[in-house]
Length: 454
Image (cartoon, rainbow, N blue to C red):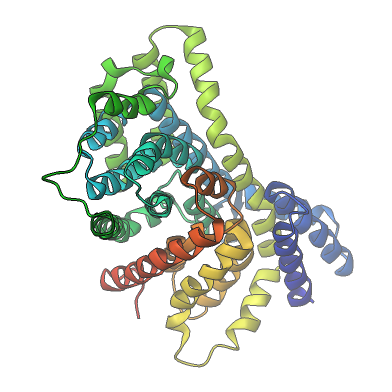
């Protein structure tokens, strides 16, 4: 019975997300609660048990041995305050000098323009907001792409590719979903992802260089005779960065913001303190240093920055309903046992690779919610039966982010296509061509570093 009801629960949840009948937040609460209550009635338990399972999934559960298992609230708080902190840093202009320095390097060379656009997208995407990355990067570079007749498809790919890498940061939505689905702490997973992230960023730079060489040849660019960009045009590019909420910029606090951010990231990676606590303190300190002892200014800036992280945090919290009911009722274990029996002896160690491969169509067609909350927990249960750790499964589940932005389910991708003047179908082919090698690179790096043991 557990297998049947649990399987229907997962299928209905995925279908509701895919067909857009329910928002992820609603689906994560309503669907499991409905089937949890049905299960309780069929097994002659009080329907209140389903609410208790949901509580365990959201807040915490105390096991028979006294061990406390945290719920999704822990990950949600980290996401909320990490998003808030980096939104605040973007607003005060922490990354503006670096972005402007990158733009200064272009000098009218198609290859330099293309490489600079990739580096700019990487810097801007640090805050985890794809929409702002698209708006800022295209505002700065599309005029140049048009002026020098560079193909807009290259800019579209070079915005999406590094953005997918920074989706692996603790304040990125996918990592938060994986932490929630597998009941992991950010310090258990994020440091293991860093080698892969670094190598794929270098790969993104190589892709930009390759595109640049192709455009040099296609356009017949000769550095000795080519026209340079005028000072006036360069100023327009700088303004596209400076004029993004200029009233919020605090250039005088640049060095403080940079040092504080570096310290917070070091302490987070080293596990010195709880990540949510680190960002909470960082937000408070940043508000005082950047906006002074001004109650209204601090209040308004905090409220504005919180808007970025609140939807993601609410969704992570709601996933506790899904995970709590699936686990508390025994449905997850029953499904995992059934699937585990189908795995040939000696092949259990390949489940992480299978998880990564399934994630390509899973993320593209089911959305990150459908894949990470509907499929990953079941695969993790199966893997646990073969001695594969949740951390290993978490690493494997992040790999398909390399091709994630081929999905039509992320709204800002259509903004990206519109602003780079490309058709979605052409963009989808191009990002898959660039993303599949990145996927392979992730697999190789994580195998070599022992994060995905064979």
